[in-house]
Image (cartoon, rainbow, N blue to C red; front, top):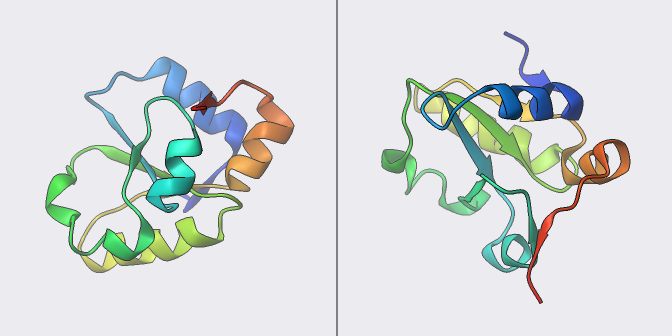
Length: 108
């Protein structure tokens, strides 16, 4: 399995999978996540992954997202060092907004 997945592939996977097979992680800061995020994603900031690893299910397919994909790659490396596998959504939310153009969950 490739370490990256396109936003189109991620969207299609999210549509076709149920919550029992996927875990979706947004590695941006809590404040940024609360202002703008995709439905279904949980927030585990990059600097908290090691401390919160016990919240994750190693049997589920894991997708990570951030603003542009760079922080997600670091998050994936942290997960892999703990025995997890996962994929990064290439281009992050920047690509999601540009390509998918679906509304994000936004708080006022």
